[in-house]
Length: 195
Length: 189
Image (tube, rainbow over all chains, first blue to last red; front, side, top):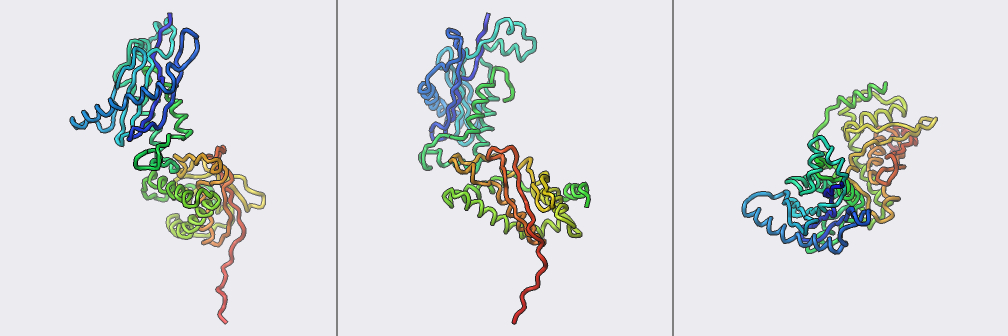
């Protein structure tokens, strides 16, 4: 018997002015055709990403009122349906990272899952029922590191990427950053502690 | 002077602490601004960087001589190369480039940079020309040219490859043109 385990379906980076900076979409396993296909169209993913903005705003207002969490993990933002769930992270400067997880994105052989001995692998097997608190932390950490590296590049002009004050709402075009997002999205599985 | 002595000298020289990221970001901003000011005329940017480096080199040599406690002249160009790589770069950038590809007449060599602190986060602009025209770290060529000129050596230095361009290594080629004789100032008539 095969067990479905979660995988990343989409990584999004959103600027402080709610402008989209970057979107990476990853294919999920489709048992009916035995192939890897994205579960939504790019437009649908863009809509899911946009729909997280209100949650971000609400949470940060709550955080500000409580005097906590300038930078940090916002946890589960909303569960889109029984398959997709969006998790969020906001940096100090207002840049948001969103991870959309497909709860049944990968398949794992049931016999293998049952035979797994150590605790990390048990977690993977058990993860089919949902994700534990803090499971997304390494993903956000890796995304933040990639974003910091991008900002350090002298030829990257942050002004070009922020619509009201700057010269326009450009998206991130850096090849290195794109590759890094791809690496993060493809390598994450539940239980990974370091990306 | 034996090569082991040179590396010991570089090791021993006390380093002042400057936050590396500050230096890297400052240099990056200079290059990016030059590219903007000269409308992405990268040949001109290279020239400007070299000129800035030359002016730095003229001053830096004094500091180098004081810090490295150099007591005598290098007897040949090979020794000079050794001191540049193992003392100079060690003092100011805390890296030690490898010296290779000597010509048989001992007048040309290459410095291969295994790491280049200036280029740590850099990704060259994706306009199809920067990859072929811009030498991002060109300031270093100017520094060497300026510094060596102050100790009676006229050299020519340029980069021939750069990992930022997708090459495997970062390599600078340095050729000795001539030793400058101490010339007397022209006499007044």
